[in-house]
Length: 150
Image 1 (spheres, rainbow, N blue to C red):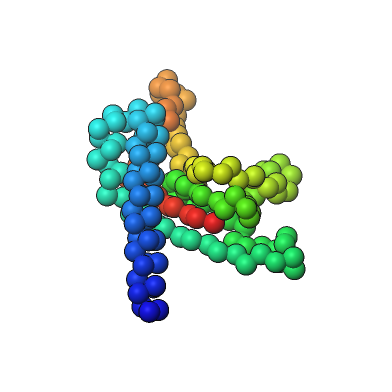
Image 2: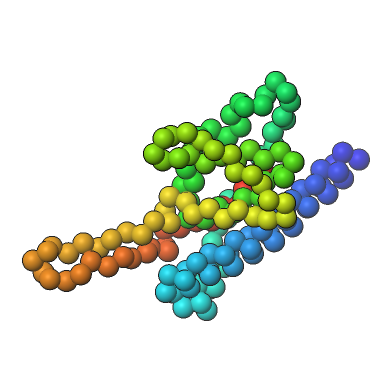
C-alpha cells in the first residue's frame, strides 16, 4: 500500500510540475515579448527550457518561529515563480539600504513572480569618442526557469 501511495504522490507532483512549467514558460515568453522579442519566437524559445522544481516544507512550531528555513540567498536564475502556503508564509525580502528583512504577506490563490540575478539588463558600452549611444541588451540564451513551492 505504501508503494501505491508513493506512486500517487509522485504522479500528483509530476502533473503539478508540468502545469507549473507551462505557467512559467508563458510568463517568460510574455516578459521576452515585453523586452522586444517577437512573441511566436519567444514561445518557441522557452518551450524546452529546463525548469528546476523544488518544494520546501517547514515544520513550524512555537519553538521554531523566527528561525531560518531557507538560507539568505538571491535567486540565481532568470525567473522564479513562488507559491506560498497562505497559512504559513515565510517569504522575506531584504531592504538593500538597511539590510533588514521584511515579511511578504502571501496572497491566497496567487503566484509571486521574481526576476532572478540573470534577469538584469547588460549594457554594451562604446568609448565616448565613438559618438555612438550605449544600448541595453538582454541575453536569453543564458537563462533558466525555477518553480518553487513553499
